[in-house]
Image (cartoon, rainbow, N blue to C red):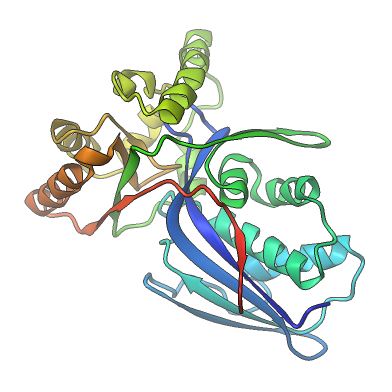
Length: 305
């Protein structure tokens, strides 16, 4: 066993319109997780970063710690005392995969600490079991644009690279929206025609993001499974989306469960879209952060402690 291991973990945007619980993309917005052995038992958790850190548990309830412990359990190794250092730059409960990044970071760092006893497939399976769905964790761990499917005996996935001209402009509001609350807004059954509406669009979303051809992307990234029911939970959604599209966004969708809004655009339009989003937030009296992100292609990687 090593003395410490440190990983860099990307934020993610999931669903990408019609790809509910199966499409995800990693972003160049990073957290870091460092796990070190310290004593025989217990946990010490330190957190720094550019976001509100108050919601992060500093005891055994912490999700990074629970994920790390899962690796020790699978490897049949006793759980030592651990010191966990977190650098958190992706805001929590905003639709950017914060729970997925905690799970991925904890499992990946602990696996490195133990000299990698778990295979990639086993790691992904455990990540999905903890998260409950594969879209964020698969993209977070693998990087790029990922379509994934959780089966009883593992995870099937396909990773692609988004085209170099694709940019993600994020409007991250200052208020939270829990995934649990956002899921409660979705009906338990849907008409068959709405299921077909979404299924038919997913291959074209993948193709357009891989080729960088964004013409007509707004209609292709339309959705009937979750966004119509979640949009009312996001303040001034239609106004904000309209301004982003007028400034050159090819499509505007919820990032994950929201409330972050994702504007997909070409690199040449990204700054104009970001400027328009900042302006509309001011005009409607909302506060939040607007940032331009490129897709991350590497996923979770080890870094020198």
